[in-house]
Image (cartoon, rainbow, N blue to C red; front, side, top):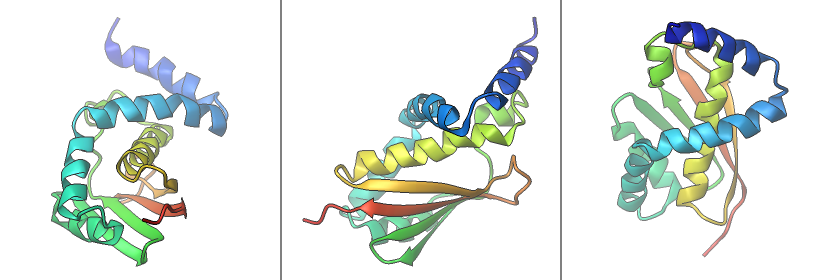
Length: 147
């Protein structure tokens, strides 16, 4: 069996899950994926920003293929990926935008790993798999921990 055929079944199965079930399922996938390298990039950015969220998102602009924006200081941010970095998508195995829940979960896991004690809401605004020119996430600090 060719691997791409297996993923067609995967896509059908994911489509049958409720949004809540997809969120739980992809939380583990996103965590594993980001631990494979991206989290270390975010960790370095966090250290360079000395833990300052506003500076972190401004410095994100220095990363290749990434744009960061402070929408509301200390509270609301945008993170934009100019290309899809998911290997499953790049290799053509998965084409459903439902997979973008994995990216949303990976960003949420990263934020909560860096700023322990804070809670975040991450909203996928649009994605390349969904037909967008880029992938945009809106990140809101929902319960900040102040030093």
